[in-house]
Image (cartoon, rainbow, N blue to C red; front, side):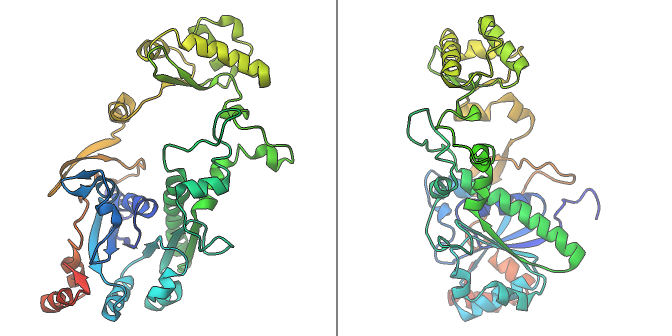
Length: 396
């Protein structure tokens, strides 16, 4: 394969997922060059299409998660719809689904059935708790998986309640990125062995890995530190979030002695430079002195001061400030894309930088926008496509 081609050029993926974890994973696969076919119910499609906030009547969440895909509106509950689905499976490499365990079996598209259509198919199932275990059939969302995996229990201030994250850690860290790694690994393994496989991904399993360091005391048979007292959860004086004079915040990650010394020097507290490893009440006293120093200046002043200090200190950016951050802008993490209905879209770029990757140029699709095109690729004549659309098997 030419080095100028996208790395997943020639790979075809059926995307049955909705909402957040699966669509993010398949979008990045599409950005890498895969032909991603988003199969949706003709009557309503992905719920994200309609959720606020909206841009010109289209859910912004959908627009953010579904570029680099084609939309096929297909009724999987109809006999003819399932036949067409299996025709599509025969010419595809991967099927990604995010239903609750048991749903694909009820739809008649379980892994055993997929293998009859293509023996080396790869099925990636993303669910909250996985295909096995006592909680496999429980409904859940990001906060539930973070709760079970200990993420919430490890988050929050000393003496306070668990803290709810402001972003979806389990959906992305436990779902999307786990799916990307598993799918790429399965494709590579199939190249060597010729065999496909069923990837059983649990978002709870995936987000559990984010607690690896936080769980070290327990894994070593020792008591778990109280919330807010573990070294990287608020225990170390130089690792935390500090309020500035104007009510904004600075984040310090001064763990190593040289960084903590530089932090103290910049704050005008050189006498504390040897006390960066203190924990317990002594560590809390040091942190209080650091916090008092940060309150003496506005965030903009601290940004200027620490721009020339190697101390692992950065401003806490919010909202549109992130879009304007010079580091992210220089790295090309945001770009503009035209959409026929929504107009100009500001999109977040894929962080994966592989040779041959191009800026995505396929906008988020309308429901069933590519149905006729994909059916024609399967050999259907326009008359049959029109008839199936009239019968509600297809949406065009």
